[in-house]
View (cartoon, rainbow, N blue to C red):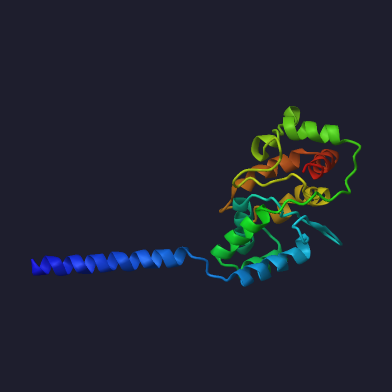
Length: 213
């Protein structure tokens, strides 16, 4: 009985220790001031409300973005599956806890979209977004990104995104995305779609998306 009691005591102590470690591991490994500093740093490029910024190069809107998508893209930058030297330098110093916390912060922001796109063919852009282009094997964008273009889970929000940013991404897809063919993510489904859209079609869809709040 003494041996059994001793073993029981050791087992309980071990279980308790593992539970404490698991709890500690699940806790944030940063302070709120550190989170604010990191978020404020992001806002120097992406806008004070995460609305995006149009300077010499369009910086994407992060406000309202799906947290899972943001975390996935930070990992893609770190693993160089997505090519962007600036974002690699920003992302590779972040811990998983910090990535998740920042993604949640930006998800809760809801500023008005930036303007600037042509309003001439918004109806066509909306039609392509909602219905696709069957003759070109382009599916409806809404089938993944939602009718409201706010995305879900790993599929990104497109509503309110800068039109010139969307245009640049779709017309330069192969130069930035899917850089590790042996380790693709769900964005791989966009590669043939981007190739099947004409320049004019990309512009109209991008313009339409930029108007959605």
